[in-house]
Each structure stands twice: as C-alpha cells, then as structure tokens.
Length: 247
Ligand code: MG
Image 1 (cartoon, rainbow, N blue to C red):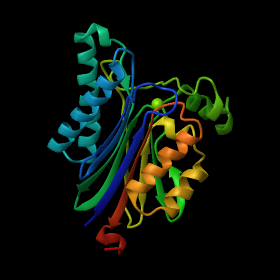
Image 2 (cartoon, rainbow, N blue to C red):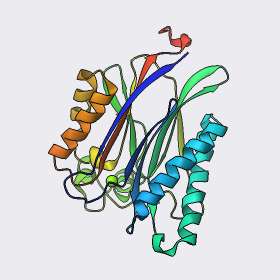
Image 3 (tube, rainbow, N blue to C red):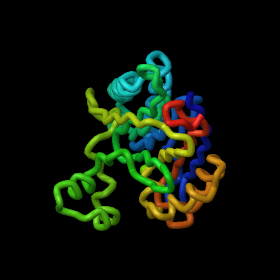
C-alpha cells in the first residue's frame, strides 16, 4: 500500500501581471499546467486541461489512462480554441504524477507535455525525470549546446510540444516504483529557470512538510528574479509499497 501527502504553492512572480499557472492536488493525481496565450487564453487553456485530465483519469486510473487523459485534454483545449477565435493560439504545458495500481503493484505514473518538469528526490539525490519539449533541450540533445548554455539561451522558452495547439499531441509516460521517503516535485519553468538543482535539493532535504517545502521553493524562485509565474507541487511517499519493505 502506498500513501501520499502533498503540498503546493504558486505565485505570479515579479514581472507578469496575471498567473497562468495552475497546480492540482487530488488525492492520487497531481499536476502543474503553465498556460500561454493572450486574452485570458493561457488561463482558459490551463483550467480546461487540468479539469479534463482529472475527470478522464478518474474514469481510467492507470498509467495508460493518465496518458490518454492528456490526449483528451489536448482535444478539449484545441476544440475550444477553434470555437472561440479570440482564444486562438492558446495552449498549456502539462506535467502530472498519479498513483496507480497495475498488476497489484502501486506505481507512480508520470506524464509530460512542454517544459513543466517532474523531479524525483530519492535517497538524497535529485533527478529530473521528465524531458523538456523545448528548442533549447533539443539543441542540448543534438550537442549544439551544453546544459549550462541552454539554461540561459534566448530560445529556452520556445516549446517544441505543447497541449492544445494542434489536433494531436504526443505524450511521454514514465512508471516509477515508489519508495517511502521519495519526494516528487512538479514545477513550472518559472521555478526551474530561477533555481539551481542544488538549491532545490537543499530545500527538499531540509523542509519535511510538503506545503512548506513548496512554499519555500516558490519564494526562493521569486527572490532569484521571479521573471515568470512560479508553481510547485511536492508529493511525498509517506508509506511505501510492501515490496520495498517500507510499510
Ligand atoms: Mg512559465
């Protein structure tokens, strides 16, 4: 049996006038959406995406179901933008983590579209699980840029994949065995652009309450510049699966 505890925080930041990020904390489903598009488009896209995701995952709470829920969310945002010309061009990132049970095993299913991220803090080590769908990340993979260069590259915000901007979307899915003590961090780029991984790891290793940890991370990103909306969801595995001996 796996039991989770979570906390989240979001902030408009110091430059933007509205917050188009959204955090979701359902008992077994957690998500961050970072909407984009003027005339309230970003807020509409993010809201439609997370509402559709939650409803669709509720009907099919599996890894495949989570992935299909993202595809359904894409269709809903895309069709809404076709029906509302003033919202044309809106879209959103979507990163989500869900606790699912497959073949009698509890698993954490992770999905991602865009450049919102999921990190796992496991045994004192922070690792980024998701891969950004951004031009900068593509250039790192092709060897044109180092990770350090990509972090400050002017094209780092340009997405190669987003939700709701086309009729179809391709979704990346991971399945991870949860262990007691694992912490998952979902965040928008407003957080990952402002904080070094070492700073994120420092907070996750020292602040045990997930709500306080999310809050501290968001405040740190704001202090470091706050050039974008900032959102963090921290999900703690407080009871692990019997198979890892940590119940
Ligand atoms: Mg952003």
